[in-house]
Image 1 (cartoon, rainbow, N blue to C red):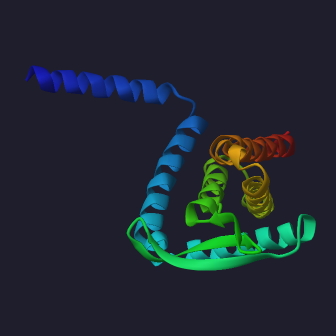
Image 2 (image 1 turned 90 degrees about the horizontal axis):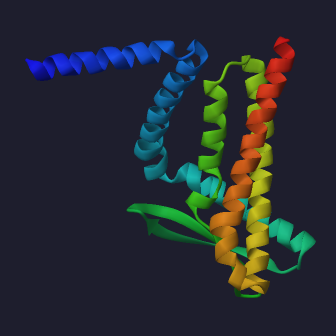
Length: 199
């Protein structure tokens, strides 16, 4: 009986504290949790096992990276796809980018930007704003994030060929920070534009 009373008291305290949080923040938290569950189920049960979306996005990222390298760095880069099994999923395509048979960079599904797109869109879905403005920012943001990711892959290829000792740090720390700061700046821009239009 004592445990039940304790549990009830804790639950009442949680509800009381929750109700003191501003409505806009509560709505954001609820939407974010629902969206997170939806994305987890959709990606793990449908998108990841089929590998179709990941393979397509990896392919176009590799093609754009190769085109960028050929245009702005050195002609002769080619893309070579390799089908393998990653994390138990068969038919996953890794895109290798080579310069005269020398390894430059490879792009796997977790580097194709899909998670970045999902995080970016998820935030926009959860915050207040008009559908029209959100759609405009989704299209604009996705294109910019895609270009930033392609630029990241190009620089990684250059590092692998010229300064391999910097590659690991750049890949795991510097570029990750830069990309997430960029996405955060897009979110801030959206919030500013929304507040300006409401004023």
